[in-house]
Figure (spheres, rainbow, N blue to C red):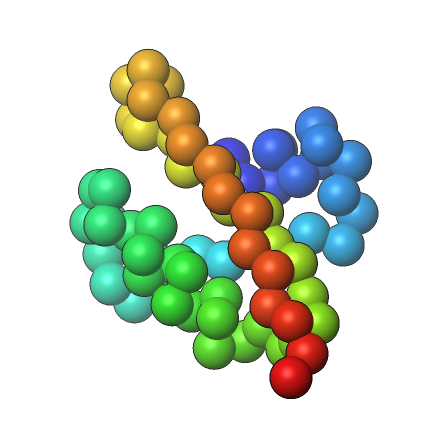
Length: 70
């Protein structure tokens, strides 16, 4: 799903952050595990977009994250 979204938004340098293999399918909590992984690998300055789609596709959410250089 993440790859399809990145292609549709035309983000050629998109990096998919997936941790299901490590933590299992944790439903809505999975987004927080993915954010934790992203923040440990993200070097400043950088920007990230996150899209979460609930399995029934009725609930969707997104956020933008920016890590500034110190």
